[in-house]
Length: 448
Image 1: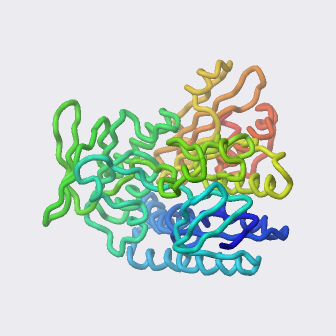
Image 2: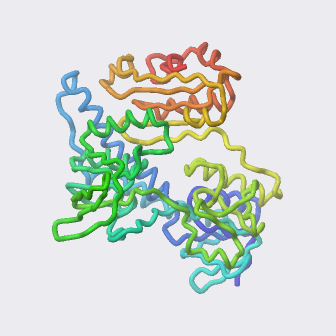
Image 3: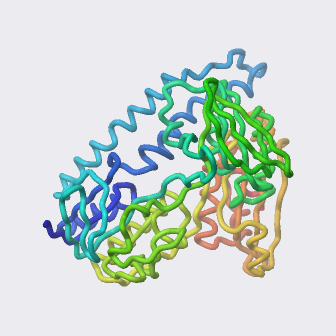
């Protein structure tokens, strides 16, 4: 049995943050992961996805300017862009492990299971830790209907050596929309099936409507209020069976993907053995990100039930909080700043703060500015049809409490709004600012 000051389960961004910070202060640290080091974002999520999107951005931009100075629309070479993506993915695990070893962190490769309140087993090796950090992230939600196991995952999509001619995504979240936009622009026929009346349910409904319309215009089939009841496989591909308004409908494609959301990846940790309480949102933690039932155990990121959104920067933030509390005693609790979220479709959709519905439920006195603005210069110069905004202002404080955007560059513009909300900059001061022009940020004044 080996003894450590800190054992970190999971080598994604939150786990990496805790391990390196604790080791830099002289603690004896071990880290383990059943998958290659790097976590979902770097290897199976945000980063490889964004690389692939880069190629479709070029095609989309050219297509919009055909006849306006551009005469040829490039095709995306799937194998080439996947090879380019793989350069980044392949380099990451070794780079991370070298960093751990440079910091004298012991590295393990295997699934950890608790065998006591302060001990885990990895393969046949037992490690004991004064503190143990659970940073195992999330996994795809299991599809609990006949043939649910036949659906591929987002990881499978990002590793496709050839793009199928037709694809179905079950679930209408950001994974479905982002991958549907990629696949359609690369020439595939795409269907999204969502059981509710509105996809992307955590975003503002009016801005989501704009994205839904843009998605349909792209040629993606968007089926709402359709409950999937089964998947069948035959020699030609797959048949997805759905029910819409009481009527059964069948959808066929060469590949089917589970995009029905993600859940904390904690089922295999044997948490009861460590007396760790958990629920469907993750490990139950107190205000210091400690387990509510075992104070020697901490949890962060998608594995923890916190007030943070399931975003990589939030996981890093929580990792820093845990490292501080391990090193200095439990005296720091997360005070989450505004957390911007982006759906990297084309056009992208971005959001920060309260939606209009949430602001009303909170009892705030609000002013809502909402408009579709395809006639603004920044939309016209890019020949973009989908450009819209909704800003929500607390009239008592004259500050922003929410911003929701769709259109070119909004993944960057949203950061301006996040900073303004974080520092509670009065709206009148935002209007007084002089912005570089013509930039996407220069439209902010007109959105307030």
